Length: 293
Image (cartoon, rainbow, N blue to C red):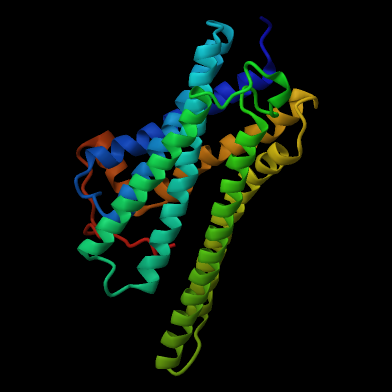
């Protein structure tokens, strides 16, 4: 079959995603110091995005090398589970950042660690169930009229996935608004204690709020077009519309390691140690909390 340029771009995107996130996973596994709840969540996100990148590559290979309905269901289910785990991990990171500010005094307790592990277990469990639905029969292989814009998923299946995304997006939006309120309130209290508002307090607060806006804006801009099109789109529409909304969604997994991993000083230090082996940091290691945005 002739190569579809959109499939080639998805495969290239998957390759970049897999390489970026494989490095993050390797760094976190290599560095014993990166065992705090924050890095556990970042590792979960990187693992999910790594699997999503591999899924895009496998989907391309099997689409043009081995044509099989069974393999098609498996690859689509694998992609659904991987991207669902990625979005769920982003929600868990948002919840963790909120807890680190709201319960700052008790954040580094055993209860927090248990909460993080419970969130991750629930996120991956739900994502696995969503990925298994097409394999277990919720597909349109035997009923073309039930197909959605993403074959072989049914309309009801993609509606469920889109509704889940909208719910997660609204929860993240609410939590980030609360985080911004807490950050602004803390900055104002510090300024009052020092009896005046300094430019540094204003700049720090503005930088923190801007970072949160960039994080949420990137997530929404990547996934919202595809989620909306899955609900309003018709399978009779040209497939280019599906590709044009799906490709930006994959870019979120490409941007995630830049936002959540490579900007972190501990990740950067561990990267030097991993590649050089002889790098000696002049600054003592300090594990930052998720509230450091």
